[in-house]
Length: 106
Image 1 (cartoon, one colour):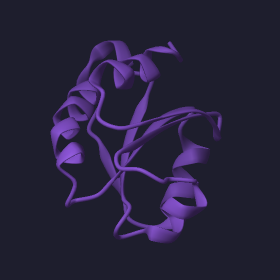
Image 2 (tube, rainbow, N blue to C red; image 1 turned 90 degrees about the horizontal axis):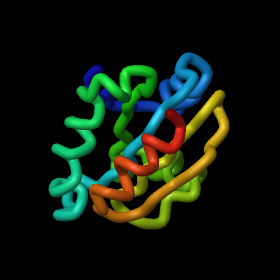
Image 3 (cartoon, one colour; image 1 turned 135 degrees about the vertical axis):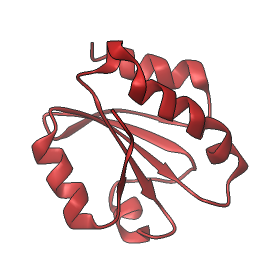
């Protein structure tokens, strides 16, 4: 399943309602760490073992209010939502931590 870009706060709210399990990457297009981890996030979205998980990206520079409202203070930040509720979060570009975050809900 591809990673979907979120372009509005309404779209973010809708994804929480429409997807039972969602991982959202808050990123900055100017961050080297974000660019480094992006291919890993893309790869995770294609793994069969994560077929029940939906993957999304939010450009924090384009949606600063959403990022602030969701408590994002570092780039990248990955937030895991189950049933519309945030259940976990990691900050930074640690590949092992990212995969572990997603595996925790399987």
